[in-house]
Image 1: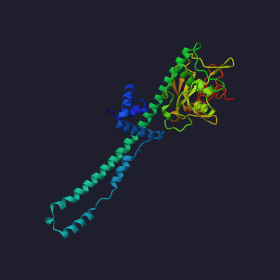
Image 2: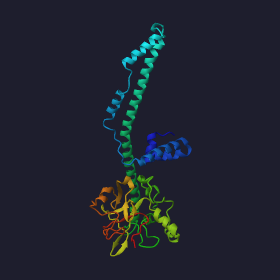
Image 3: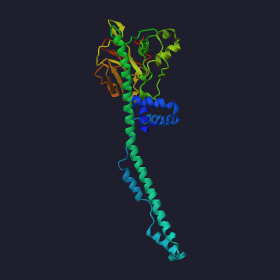
Image 4: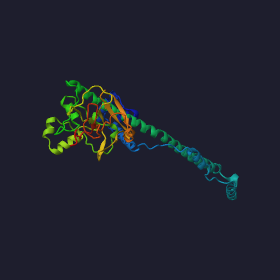
Length: 349
């Protein structure tokens, strides 16, 4: 079964429909050529990871400068041509020369010049084409990965809403204040214990592929019993990895007690989001080329919040990664959402 280049690129970017993705996966084990093409296009797309936001705009005077250079090329002067004619006529009478001798030189010269001009025109065309297409490819890839991340958040959020609907109090998974269950990644463990197992794809942000960050790949989701019997090193490994690339709500305080947030359909209360990387108690947003993050709210909507809002402190709503006291801890009240990466506990002390 053959696939076009466009279908393979769409599959690698996560834009392929389910039928196409299933057919490609089914063909891979028995089609070495398909595997090689996938590897080739994957390396090309990975190379674009490092293009970033660099602008590829051709100089406005590129064509004019090229034409000026062509005009400056040295040409044979009339005196040189006359001298060449005199020298050649002294050696052989023109009537005695073979016809080929008269034709070969000018034909070869014209052919050489045409070849050189064609090469220059091709070079200019390629430069202009690359200047126009590379930014378009980068933008399309960025938008595709941002959309795929939003889809992953919705899929994971759907499981969280199902979990809440099964609870008498309609609450999301609870994160303990201490002990082996004191980390936000317990959301994933609670879902798995309830039979709502998220796939590894749902816990990954496509825009972070190739980005160096202190997050380990999810190998398996542990049970609550395994958390309580794990060694300290194994427990730390699970805490850092089980939540994947996302940050989860740490809970809220009600009547001075830490409880899980309740699903009430609020459009301003964050439940899940792209996780920042914390360095020296400061969050650094690496997802989506550092331009912003996707956030899932209690009403099921996913919205994109730009990084400039954090940098300029223009947040008109609740900061999703700090409580009202500015700490990376559980919310102070029921309207105070505070999210953190998998390994974070609800209370720092």
